Length: 266
Length: 266
Image 1 (tube, each protein chain N blue to C red):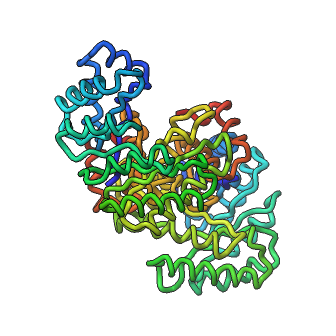
Image 2: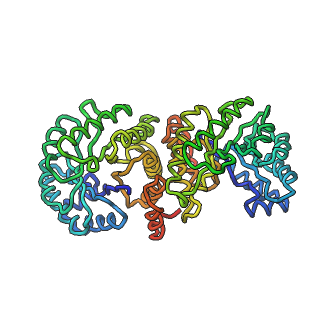
């Protein structure tokens, strides 16, 4: 089944940042409750926006979030020190967001990850910058998997993020992402693929329909996770439907259950 | 750009059958006007449901339809005699729906098609029945293209229909259709692929979302035409969006135009 990483508890969002600054328990608790009901697999928690306050904000968020949901968390920080603190506070095996091949990020993150019981999001980014071709993306994915396997990670715990780039920049960016996913899911059997969907629609109007249409097309190529705002009912309905069509929903059970719950409506 | 074959003028639909029986010009003319405005590439015309009346009904329909649109027509009949009459009455190069490899259909249709100036929909059906695997579909597609090329058809005038089968019958039917399309569009470069979308959702609830989600996923695999009810605004919006994401819309021009016209809404 599709892995939904709910992206809403992120201090780069103004309302979340204000709620964290004011220690507004109600606001965060309510959002996490809604995300849980809407079918999140992981709740992403990012406390990075208030410079100098990340550690205390992360601790407070973890307490609030874990007070209202039993879902595992996606610990979202570039700083291994913050991730180390967060790791000590989670009740369930978390997903760590993220490692990349940029030297300044790779070395401390590999050290942090070694011996940890967690999943990890691995960005296809290196010191040359954003990948430009399918081959770029796939080569970086293979290096990341090799390095993570070398420190004991199983493929099922690795979530490759191809770094989706906007259609408004290059009309081939959708195809590049789709082909990369197809190749990664074939050549690196057993890994997951994920990513921030909304990059695809940057610079375009009516972004929600572009994001959800793209997600269905990515699922057609084997994409099995996304970092997304799944409180948007339209994208969640299309995700459930696409996952069924892609053959990942035995006897259409999850689709039919979602229809009965009023979550999938034509 | 995606080829939309509007399926609404079909006498197997009760309202259309009644309108044809009563020679209700207004009903048909209005529907065709709406289909034209909504972005059809072809208007499918099927007059087969009133046994014994197909020829007169087809003649009447062609006159009415061509009175309100300059779009080319898709002549939809299994009977070469009807198609011969219809061919003599069309103003623009039509699409003929359809030939298959069933012997009773193939022989008279090949004879009919020889020397005609038209496109043709070619069904991956033979006397063994519906195709069961990707290999079945692709093998039949190759035979159809070979036979049509032998009587002078260009690939750009051939629309292969893989025969989409329901998810409710086999959870792998979506994948079979998608893989078949990808292989056909690669191995038979230059042909089009098309099909009746709504088969995918037979037996499921909320069929409209299944149909439009599946269409986006098929477009991700190269599908470039569908026989569909494009007056459904949601499916048309997703088609335009998916075609853009698949790289078929230079500078997102058609997508942006559709947004401005209020046809693509999140």
